[in-house]
Amino acid sequence: MFVKQSLSSSKLAWKPNNSPLLQRSPILHRSLHSYALILLFISRPVLANLELPNLAVNDHESQLANAGSEKPDDCESCVLLVKSFEKGLERTERGKHEGGDTSWEEKNLKNYADSEVRLVEIQDDLCNDLTTGKTQCLSMAETGEQHIEDWWFEHRNKNVRLHDYLCITKLKKCCPEGTFGPKCQKCPDCDGHGKCDGSGTRSGSGECNCNQGYRGKLCDECDKDYYSSRFGSEGKFECLKCHKACKGGCLGPTSANCTECAAGYARDPKTNYCNDINECELNPDQLSLDSKRLCKDGTYCENTDGHYKCSPCHHVCQTCLGYGRDKCLTCVSDYHMNENRTCIHFSDETADGSTVIYYLYMVMELMAIVILNHCTMKLTHFLLRVTGFRAFDFFEDLITEMILRLSLTLPIALLVGHMSSQGITKRYMTNLYKSFRYIITGNLSDTAEYAS
Image (cartoon, rainbow, N blue to C red; front, side, top):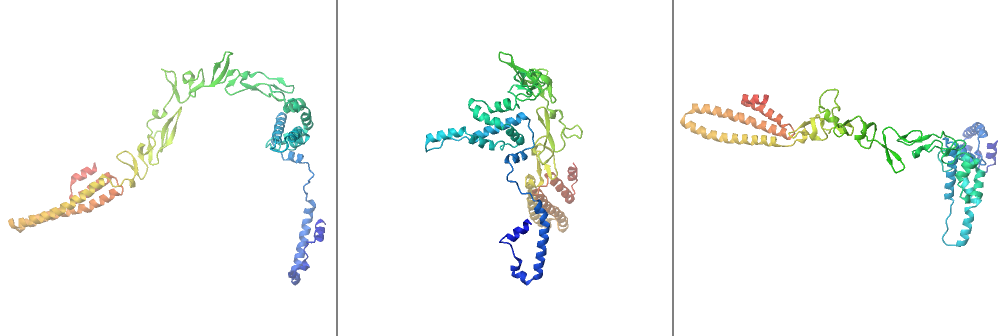
């Protein structure tokens, strides 16, 4: 009914017959009309059960419903209320304005400071600054509303604290500090090293909850791993923590005063101090396969005070004795250890002394071939004149074989020099060079040296 009346009475209601499109298409007209009726039929129960927000609901009740779920006790709730009220006092405090009628401002501001208007401003915003305990704070504000008004008009200017008046005297939710329980009994002294359980509240056992390092019914003894340090003429004392090297207590501040040395420390019989044990020095063989090794491959032992830790090696080390390339014992794949016992990548070892040596071989053998060839021609003419053709043929065969073997070493020198520039190790190049020399020259001494 509500929808029908609204549609029919509205001046902006859409009339299907006014549409030129629908006038030309009666089927479309009837279809839309049917859809509208179906939509109206479906929406009627929804509209009937629709609950619009009640604008008359008390804002105070909605705040209670949306408050936090944590539940402080009654005394804590009252304390939260008092703190929220004090923040309201600060928020509504108004200073003097520059210019204008100063006497009028002072008179009116003074009137506002103690006015009911200011009180209402504070009460309207009570507990809204809280994130926890808001529900309990609002409930406490409602309970103590009249007491707050009485305090505002009758006791506020008499230096009576709101906490004492509201939480202790009127609502009886709290006790004066130093008392506890329903009847606000006096707390024990706790020797200044603890706090009475329930102090300032209407609950609690009244027993001493000792501070860290203290124990006893009245917190007048030092706890385990603490020692007593007395000061002053009245016999006052303070419990201080023992040295970290101590176990089971101590009689003073240093490790020499330990009752027993803690794990990772050992007592020096000469000085009586508990000194750190260097676990890494006690286990020097970090490369053994013994299951008792302190650190696995890729890490090394590093001593710490009272213990040790396994720190990662440099990324080029497979095993090491410390951090850095020069601390490696073995290298990871694609790395090798050079003459300085440093792990370097094959590509990092560029042209060095070995390359120079093999290029020098190449130059010397090239020069030898040129010189030998020139000398052979000179010697050939001489022997031809002196000994005849037969001796010359023998000597020419010998010289030709020598030149052949020397010339074959030239490409070998070039190959080895190139391999050296690409980072192949010097030992590998030397052995390879000797192998080729043996194949060409047949010198067995090269083989024996290579095998070694």
